[in-house]
Amino acid sequence: MVAATAGAALVATLAACAPDDGPPTLNWYINSDNGGQAQIAAECTEAADGAYTIETVLLPRDAAAQREQLARRLAAEDRSIDLMSLDPPFIPELSEPGFLAPIPDDVAEAVSENVVQGSLDSATWNDELVAIPFWANTQLLWYRESVVEEAGLDMSQPVTWDQLIEVATDQDRYLAVQGIKGESLTVWINALIASAGGEIITNPGSSAEDTELGLETDAGREAARILEQIGSEGLGGPGLPTSDESASLRLFQGDDASFMVNWPFVWTSTQQAVDDGLLDQSVLDDIGWALYPAVTEGTDSAPPVGGINLGVGAFSEHTDLAFEAAQCIVTPEHQAFYMVNDGNPASNTEAYEDAEVQETFPMYEMIRDSLEQAAPRPQTPLYNEISTGLQETWYPVSDVNPDTSPEAATELITAVLRGERLL
Image 1 (spheres, rainbow, N blue to C red):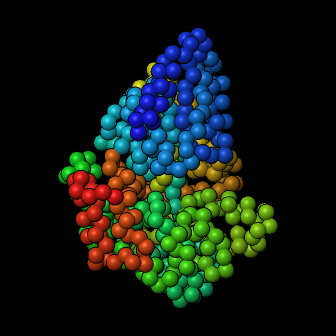
Image 2: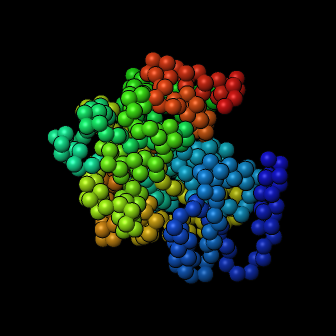
Image 3: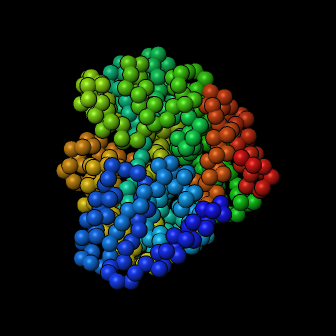
């Protein structure tokens, strides 16, 4: 850690010694994509008309490694970090110690207009917008039309997990879900608990010692029941313990599939597989989509929300220009381009009116509606401990027990937060 901190400090020093002639260069630290962010940076540089230049800097591919790198460098007050593409669960951790520059009121108002609620929630900490919504993401319920037709299920109405389990059991088919010991599992657990009307943390603004968990509740036990039933009855397929988003998509594309919860990338990926001759067109024609399944009949589900929000480094020498650049980056036009080019859904509802967006994603209305209904993962600076603790105690899902797993997770996470145990 000493070496990393020293390296970060050196970067900051070098940045401070850069020549003053010419327009300032804003460094935008980005996650890996198909080149869309670099294209947007070039367009916003041109639109700035000499006021600044935006250069993109690629972060590690893994989200946890991105978090670690940014946290270390910001802790060293690295002045070279002007803009950051941030995974929503890590935003409170960076905001709480003052690593993110406060968003001016006029900017906050402008970048919140026509933005889906799920993105606003994921960019908010302590009731303040601390990051700027860029692109959003949500999971839909994908289904095979042939399976639904045989079951006589009306997909124009909300469906529950129990209905999916019943259909999959009756037809001896698989439910494609993500049971790998990783962030995908936390996403699933959180969506189930939130859909049941609960929350993993009941007092997210509290200190580590005072944090209270909502796992030992009816909502927590219902979430555990659904996980256990899918796992123990083999409904998630033989590869469930290692199934991530890509693996569950492959399962869903097979002959024994019924339903899947997954992100919108599955549509373009399946189209590409058909174009490449890896899948028959009949597979694509058999796919339908709906809102994320409910836990309780008559109660709205709370789909997962993900994506990327933009943070401005608190130690940047050009925060005013960085906020100006961020507003350029997140225009509806750029979000529509990014959705078509990189497959990542927009956070601004105006982008969904774009003809190319609608052609590329025929389920665009469902994506937009899901994002309005979506619930973020626990908003807390302690997110890493919460997520890891859940993965330690609710894995594999076939071993989850509604009577004991919520208690085991509560005991482990609480002990870790109090410094009594290590993960």
